[in-house]
Image (tube, rainbow, N blue to C red; front, top):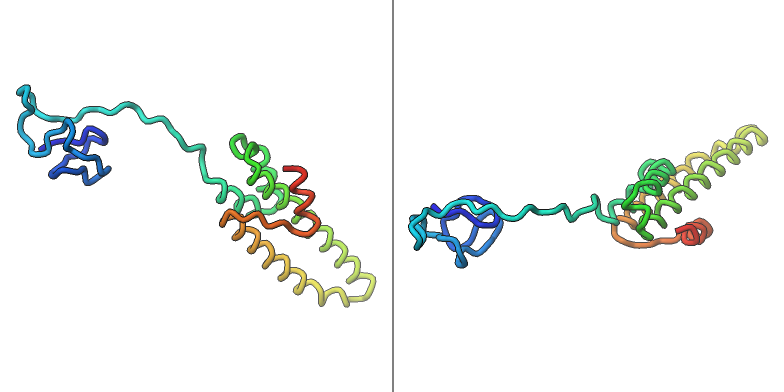
Length: 160
């Protein structure tokens, strides 16, 4: 049986079933001996360098929103991602989005105390709105869209 010169797996035809390499050039797909008399075997390929720097930019952009400003800061610090404008934009927008959410939550808390409970009606509405917007921002970043939020998006774009 012949072996693929690219991946080293056994081949029983004209193409390697593992990696798809054509066996027509140099390998002996029928098994047996090569013309020089030696048996066909595994020819180690050159070492393959890692070409990937990790995850793709759309996944990194979506993950910027996952845990709020924490993941935004993490992606601004991590080396391969802090050079990418798409990831930097989403990281800054995630940070500003969550800071705005915290500020609005504090203002509603004060409103609740000052109005003797009327602000409590706003908690679920605003919370649901921010949750839906958070999901939409993650979905958009994953689909390589650069959706800018009204004020926050301009700030994020200047920083990125």
